Image (cartoon, rainbow, N blue to C red; front, side, top):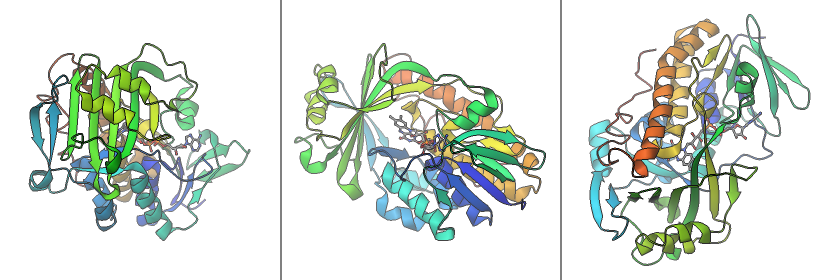
Length: 385
Ligand code: FAD
């Protein structure tokens, strides 16, 4: 085994960013992905300035420009009248204050940008249809076993296989993720399909007791991303994301201002999905000898701060920097862990609290939100490791 070989389990946003960061540093990296094809769900994603800093460090600034949507501001709306009740300035102010924009992106566009970045350096880095079933740590490396029975070794193994991580289960024991009682319906509409007066200038958030509705523009695709959150006592589905009839959330929002249910009813067939929101408790470490956990595999969080993918991108940068600064892989992973575990844990807990705020409990999200909690200022390229 050569010293700079790495296996990344999972080709999500976190796994691809990690593989790209390692490949740029000269590592021989393989990404093992269980799915038969590369892709992401058809939905939007917030890229706050901390996420953008990670993507710039990965050398993707120019490639991102055509796929980003840069909102001038985010408004909050009264649930009953739709009147504006608050405004957070984004746009040029975010660039002035943070040096990078606050943006929205279609998840598939970001995913493809990361995959292409990796494939430009190593066209065969990604192995599809390859599910990892177990991992084991050795003295100077680690190995993974695939469900086809193959065993692969490397100096470094990264578990970036998401909320239901097999790598995490192999290291920590299998524990079922907890259903939180929140459901998200996600719908994507072409601008032309959105009823008159429902398109915000950038983004709009409407929150009240038990429900929350977020919508934002994806300018390069001329699409509006809508996410409607509500409490549902049970999640009877086997999968955590299922195609949904938009009439169901539309009815739930019928007593709020009419734009919201009208938008859901206008969602075209096949563009509305229902997600059960699952959660896990924080773990004390992300580093296990020559193995480490990253992204949702390490710190799965509810989506209410919009920081899950952002933290996965930060993880990738800090991990690559730690490996660049420290030749002993196990020691480098400890440095990665020390830099990242406190932030991952805080984000998991603060995402839970944000969920309550956005559903009308506790302080107003206008007063306490991901920006006031200082998520945007974090610089994964400069933070001490
Ligand atoms: P994943 O994206 O889950 O990727 C894991 C990959 O591993 C997948 O490709 C999977 O197929 C593969 N895999 C799984 N098991 C195996 C195995 N055994 N072997 C091989 N491969 C395997 N975050 C933000 O930053 N901003 C937002 O605005 C935002 N909005 C969100 C809205 C909703 C409704 C939800 C549910 C989440 C949102 N998030 C957001 C969170 C974000 O989507 C996740 O945190 C992020 O995608 C995690 O990336 P990941 O790469 O760690 O995991």
